Length: 271
View: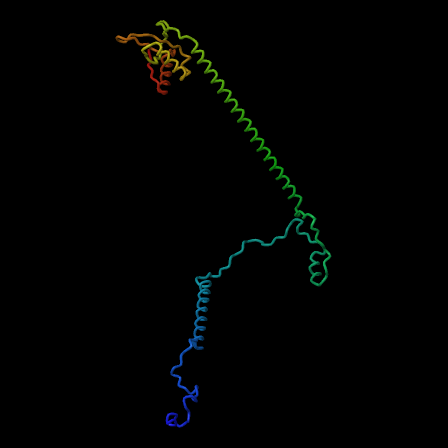
Protein backbone atom coordinates (compact mmCIF):
# COMPACT_ATOMS: atom_id res chain seq x y z
CA UNK A 1 0.00 0.00 0.00
CA UNK A 2 2.94 2.24 0.64
CA UNK A 3 4.10 1.76 -2.88
CA UNK A 4 0.70 2.71 -4.26
CA UNK A 5 0.53 5.93 -2.26
CA UNK A 6 4.07 7.02 -3.15
CA UNK A 7 3.69 6.27 -6.81
CA UNK A 8 6.07 3.42 -6.59
CA UNK A 9 8.98 5.62 -5.44
CA UNK A 10 9.24 4.14 -2.00
CA UNK A 11 9.03 7.56 -0.26
CA UNK A 12 7.14 8.00 2.92
CA UNK A 13 6.02 11.24 4.57
CA UNK A 14 9.22 11.67 6.56
CA UNK A 15 11.46 11.41 3.51
CA UNK A 16 9.62 13.91 1.22
CA UNK A 17 11.71 16.64 -0.44
CA UNK A 18 10.56 20.28 0.37
CA UNK A 19 11.49 21.69 -3.07
CA UNK A 20 9.15 19.20 -4.67
CA UNK A 21 6.15 20.42 -2.67
CA UNK A 22 3.45 22.41 -4.52
CA UNK A 23 3.61 26.21 -4.31
CA UNK A 24 -0.10 26.91 -3.99
CA UNK A 25 0.26 28.34 -0.45
CA UNK A 26 3.14 30.80 -1.30
CA UNK A 27 2.64 34.24 0.38
CA UNK A 28 4.09 37.53 -1.00
CA UNK A 29 6.56 39.14 1.44
CA UNK A 30 5.45 42.70 0.43
CA UNK A 31 8.60 43.78 -1.44
CA UNK A 32 8.19 45.77 -4.71
CA UNK A 33 9.15 44.15 -7.91
CA UNK A 34 11.95 45.59 -10.12
CA UNK A 35 9.44 46.60 -12.78
CA UNK A 36 7.45 48.65 -10.30
CA UNK A 37 10.60 50.37 -9.00
CA UNK A 38 11.65 51.21 -12.55
CA UNK A 39 8.24 52.68 -13.26
CA UNK A 40 8.40 54.84 -10.11
CA UNK A 41 11.89 56.12 -11.02
CA UNK A 42 10.82 56.96 -14.57
CA UNK A 43 7.70 58.74 -13.29
CA UNK A 44 9.76 60.83 -10.84
CA UNK A 45 12.19 61.84 -13.60
CA UNK A 46 9.31 62.83 -15.85
CA UNK A 47 7.78 64.93 -13.04
CA UNK A 48 11.11 66.67 -12.32
CA UNK A 49 11.59 67.35 -16.02
CA UNK A 50 8.11 68.84 -16.26
CA UNK A 51 8.75 71.14 -13.29
CA UNK A 52 12.11 72.30 -14.64
CA UNK A 53 10.65 72.82 -18.09
CA UNK A 54 7.81 74.89 -16.66
CA UNK A 55 10.25 77.08 -14.75
CA UNK A 56 12.41 77.59 -17.83
CA UNK A 57 9.36 78.50 -19.91
CA UNK A 58 8.15 80.92 -17.22
CA UNK A 59 11.52 82.68 -17.08
CA UNK A 60 12.30 82.71 -20.79
CA UNK A 61 8.88 82.64 -22.38
CA UNK A 62 6.51 85.48 -23.22
CA UNK A 63 6.98 88.42 -25.61
CA UNK A 64 10.51 89.41 -26.44
CA UNK A 65 12.02 92.65 -27.61
CA UNK A 66 12.75 93.37 -31.23
CA UNK A 67 16.47 93.69 -30.55
CA UNK A 68 16.68 97.37 -31.43
CA UNK A 69 20.01 98.98 -30.59
CA UNK A 70 20.17 102.05 -28.36
CA UNK A 71 21.90 104.87 -30.17
CA UNK A 72 24.74 106.55 -28.33
CA UNK A 73 24.80 110.27 -27.79
CA UNK A 74 26.59 112.38 -30.35
CA UNK A 75 30.14 113.37 -29.60
CA UNK A 76 33.30 111.79 -28.26
CA UNK A 77 32.88 109.34 -25.41
CA UNK A 78 36.58 109.53 -24.57
CA UNK A 79 38.35 112.82 -24.10
CA UNK A 80 41.96 113.42 -23.23
CA UNK A 81 42.45 115.24 -19.92
CA UNK A 82 43.77 118.76 -20.17
CA UNK A 83 45.31 119.13 -16.70
CA UNK A 84 48.35 117.63 -15.01
CA UNK A 85 46.56 114.34 -14.32
CA UNK A 86 47.47 113.25 -17.85
CA UNK A 87 51.20 113.18 -17.19
CA UNK A 88 53.03 109.92 -17.82
CA UNK A 89 56.24 109.33 -15.90
CA UNK A 90 59.23 107.30 -17.00
CA UNK A 91 59.15 103.68 -15.82
CA UNK A 92 55.45 103.75 -15.13
CA UNK A 93 53.99 100.26 -15.48
CA UNK A 94 57.32 98.43 -15.52
CA UNK A 95 56.80 96.99 -12.04
CA UNK A 96 53.86 94.87 -13.17
CA UNK A 97 55.83 93.35 -16.04
CA UNK A 98 58.86 92.73 -13.84
CA UNK A 99 56.74 91.05 -11.19
CA UNK A 100 55.16 88.79 -13.84
CA UNK A 101 58.67 87.64 -14.74
CA UNK A 102 59.49 86.74 -11.15
CA UNK A 103 61.31 89.87 -10.04
CA UNK A 104 60.60 90.91 -6.44
CA UNK A 105 59.36 94.53 -6.41
CA UNK A 106 61.50 96.84 -4.31
CA UNK A 107 58.70 99.24 -3.44
CA UNK A 108 57.30 99.37 0.10
CA UNK A 109 54.16 100.88 1.59
CA UNK A 110 54.54 103.36 4.42
CA UNK A 111 51.37 103.05 6.58
CA UNK A 112 52.24 106.22 8.53
CA UNK A 113 52.31 108.48 5.49
CA UNK A 114 49.23 110.58 4.80
CA UNK A 115 47.52 110.16 1.43
CA UNK A 116 48.44 112.69 -1.18
CA UNK A 117 45.97 115.33 -2.24
CA UNK A 118 44.43 114.96 -5.69
CA UNK A 119 46.32 116.83 -8.35
CA UNK A 120 44.50 120.04 -9.26
CA UNK A 121 45.38 122.98 -11.43
CA UNK A 122 46.26 126.37 -9.90
CA UNK A 123 43.09 127.79 -11.40
CA UNK A 124 40.95 125.17 -9.70
CA UNK A 125 42.74 125.71 -6.39
CA UNK A 126 42.22 129.49 -6.60
CA UNK A 127 38.54 129.04 -7.49
CA UNK A 128 38.05 126.69 -4.53
CA UNK A 129 39.72 129.14 -2.16
CA UNK A 130 37.60 132.03 -3.47
CA UNK A 131 34.41 129.97 -3.08
CA UNK A 132 35.36 129.03 0.49
CA UNK A 133 36.12 132.66 1.38
CA UNK A 134 32.83 133.81 -0.15
CA UNK A 135 30.89 131.16 1.78
CA UNK A 136 32.61 132.22 5.02
CA UNK A 137 31.79 135.89 4.36
CA UNK A 138 28.14 135.09 3.62
CA UNK A 139 27.89 133.01 6.78
CA UNK A 140 29.42 135.81 8.89
CA UNK A 141 27.07 138.38 7.32
CA UNK A 142 24.04 136.17 8.00
CA UNK A 143 25.10 135.67 11.62
CA UNK A 144 25.64 139.42 12.08
CA UNK A 145 22.23 140.16 10.56
CA UNK A 146 20.61 137.66 12.89
CA UNK A 147 22.35 139.19 15.92
CA UNK A 148 21.32 142.71 14.88
CA UNK A 149 17.74 141.57 14.42
CA UNK A 150 17.73 140.00 17.88
CA UNK A 151 19.05 143.24 19.37
CA UNK A 152 16.38 145.27 17.55
CA UNK A 153 13.63 142.91 18.65
CA UNK A 154 14.81 143.05 22.26
CA UNK A 155 15.01 146.85 22.17
CA UNK A 156 11.50 147.08 20.68
CA UNK A 157 10.13 144.71 23.33
CA UNK A 158 11.80 146.71 26.10
CA UNK A 159 10.47 150.00 24.71
CA UNK A 160 6.95 148.57 24.39
CA UNK A 161 7.12 147.23 27.95
CA UNK A 162 8.29 150.63 29.26
CA UNK A 163 5.56 152.44 27.32
CA UNK A 164 2.90 150.08 28.65
CA UNK A 165 4.20 150.49 32.19
CA UNK A 166 4.22 154.31 31.84
CA UNK A 167 0.72 154.27 30.38
CA UNK A 168 -0.56 152.07 33.18
CA UNK A 169 1.08 154.31 35.80
CA UNK A 170 -0.45 157.43 34.20
CA UNK A 171 -3.88 155.82 34.13
CA UNK A 172 -3.58 154.84 37.78
CA UNK A 173 -2.43 158.37 38.65
CA UNK A 174 -5.36 159.97 36.82
CA UNK A 175 -7.80 157.57 38.43
CA UNK A 176 -6.37 158.36 41.88
CA UNK A 177 -6.56 162.12 41.19
CA UNK A 178 -10.11 161.76 39.92
CA UNK A 179 -11.10 159.82 43.02
CA UNK A 180 -9.44 162.38 45.31
CA UNK A 181 -10.90 165.46 43.57
CA UNK A 182 -14.48 166.22 44.63
CA UNK A 183 -16.93 166.56 41.78
CA UNK A 184 -18.25 170.13 41.62
CA UNK A 185 -21.96 170.58 41.83
CA UNK A 186 -23.35 171.12 38.35
CA UNK A 187 -25.18 174.32 37.66
CA UNK A 188 -27.25 175.34 34.68
CA UNK A 189 -24.63 177.95 33.85
CA UNK A 190 -22.02 175.22 33.55
CA UNK A 191 -23.76 173.81 30.52
CA UNK A 192 -21.92 174.55 27.31
CA UNK A 193 -23.25 177.59 25.55
CA UNK A 194 -21.87 176.69 22.16
CA UNK A 195 -23.70 174.49 19.71
CA UNK A 196 -22.84 170.85 19.04
CA UNK A 197 -23.55 169.31 22.44
CA UNK A 198 -23.76 165.51 22.87
CA UNK A 199 -26.01 164.12 25.58
CA UNK A 200 -24.65 160.90 26.98
CA UNK A 201 -27.68 160.01 29.08
CA UNK A 202 -30.31 161.11 31.61
CA UNK A 203 -30.11 159.69 35.14
CA UNK A 204 -32.33 159.69 38.19
CA UNK A 205 -29.69 161.25 40.46
CA UNK A 206 -26.55 163.32 40.26
CA UNK A 207 -24.52 160.50 41.82
CA UNK A 208 -25.68 158.15 39.08
CA UNK A 209 -24.65 160.71 36.45
CA UNK A 210 -21.20 161.11 38.03
CA UNK A 211 -20.76 157.33 38.18
CA UNK A 212 -21.73 157.02 34.51
CA UNK A 213 -19.22 159.76 33.59
CA UNK A 214 -16.41 158.01 35.49
CA UNK A 215 -17.16 154.76 33.65
CA UNK A 216 -17.41 156.38 30.22
CA UNK A 217 -14.33 158.58 30.61
CA UNK A 218 -12.30 155.57 31.75
CA UNK A 219 -13.49 153.49 28.81
CA UNK A 220 -13.22 156.28 26.22
CA UNK A 221 -10.24 158.48 27.11
CA UNK A 222 -10.99 160.94 24.32
CA UNK A 223 -14.09 162.14 26.24
CA UNK A 224 -11.88 163.84 28.84
CA UNK A 225 -10.87 166.56 26.38
CA UNK A 226 -14.49 167.71 26.10
CA UNK A 227 -16.15 169.82 28.78
CA UNK A 228 -18.87 167.89 30.58
CA UNK A 229 -21.93 169.11 32.40
CA UNK A 230 -24.66 167.60 34.55
CA UNK A 231 -27.83 169.64 34.36
CA UNK A 232 -31.11 168.84 36.14
CA UNK A 233 -34.31 168.99 34.13
CA UNK A 234 -37.97 168.45 34.82
CA UNK A 235 -39.59 165.67 32.87
CA UNK A 236 -43.19 165.41 33.93
CA UNK A 237 -43.40 165.00 37.69
CA UNK A 238 -39.79 163.88 38.19
CA UNK A 239 -36.32 165.42 37.91
CA UNK A 240 -33.63 163.89 35.72
CA UNK A 241 -29.94 164.77 35.48
CA UNK A 242 -28.63 165.06 31.93
CA UNK A 243 -24.99 164.19 31.32
CA UNK A 244 -23.64 166.17 28.35
CA UNK A 245 -20.31 167.04 26.71
CA UNK A 246 -19.47 169.90 24.36
CA UNK A 247 -18.00 168.99 20.97
CA UNK A 248 -17.43 172.54 19.65
CA UNK A 249 -19.50 172.17 16.49
CA UNK A 250 -22.33 170.16 15.06
CA UNK A 251 -19.96 168.15 12.82
CA UNK A 252 -17.71 167.33 15.77
CA UNK A 253 -20.75 166.30 17.79
CA UNK A 254 -21.93 164.00 15.01
CA UNK A 255 -18.47 162.41 14.71
CA UNK A 256 -18.21 161.96 18.49
CA UNK A 257 -21.67 160.45 18.73
CA UNK A 258 -20.91 158.13 15.79
CA UNK A 259 -17.81 156.79 17.56
CA UNK A 260 -19.83 156.13 20.72
CA UNK A 261 -22.57 154.37 18.78
CA UNK A 262 -20.03 152.13 17.05
CA UNK A 263 -18.71 151.15 20.49
CA UNK A 264 -22.25 150.26 21.60
CA UNK A 265 -23.09 153.38 23.62
CA UNK A 266 -26.17 155.56 23.13
CA UNK A 267 -26.05 159.33 22.66
CA UNK A 268 -28.19 162.26 21.43
CA UNK A 269 -26.95 165.36 19.59
CA UNK A 270 -28.35 168.56 21.16
CA UNK A 271 -28.48 171.34 18.53
